[in-house]
Image (cartoon, rainbow over the protein chains, first blue to last red):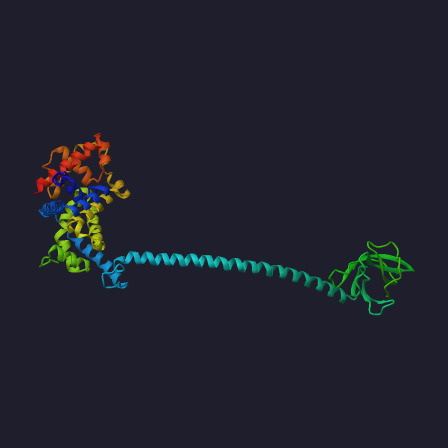
Length: 259
Length: 178
């Protein structure tokens, strides 16, 4: 290339004055490193420019210097508060802002983890609360049933009749009959599980006639089972009937009582 | 505070890299005026010119480890920091609103790029010796920071012509300086 032409072509001034494009700048730097004449010419122009700008330069307002020095002092204080290694290492050149950026990143990562972890814990607690809430509802319902049953047993209007096994003395049930409301309740103290096609049926006996008081679900887990009302009764009996019940007993009573 | 001793450029650079306050004091005393002279015709507003000068010196102090002496003199590096800070300021939204800054399409800024009171020192004084047409191009590209493409469009001149004329003006400038 023609170095002389390049030197006189305005590239040096353009580079020194910061008017080159990125590409032109790279090209100039590489040429200046290769051709000492170009570097020399650049230096000469820089010196001439510097001299011209220093010559009768306008004086900036005096107070600016104090502001600049105090601003720089603040930067220094920051550096002292966060001392950097004294040696010229890559770490030293990081500067306060990069340290702060690094600290911010750590802080952000920490906050993100904290948020993630908290969310996980929250979901876990939420599931636990839901499960406990369900348990409490069930327990409360059961307790209310028991309370109602206990209240019934304490009611002086309620008559109790033990039904004893007619053939097996271990089989045993209890009738609670509210003489005021005529409600009938049954307690299954010990009644064996019937065969698949059979069901227990409760009867009231009045004047030798059986009155149907309903089918008994042995599988239910209640203390007292509410049966059909009966206006009057002399005795109660339970018979084993085909599933669905019968209009009149078809077998001899399993248990029998007198009021 | 007046500085009673001087530094060679090498000594100054070494001392500044060690964050030597005295060296920075010297740097300010020695170069603030020259940098002020470059910022002033770009920003034109007195208060903002002061702000830019402060910013420039703070940036010089902060970025001292980025200065590479193989690429040019310390002053050239500082000059470019100051000019960039000044042009950035004129591009800021606040400046545009408060100054109603002349846009490149503003006829007056093209016809009469020189502003009274800003041509009697520094580079501007030298630029006065250039032909009007050349001075206009330097003003638009150097002081107002427009790209060659923007200038070509605004003045309705082919891009190649803008490049050639600016290069010619710049080499003319070197002749005038030496």
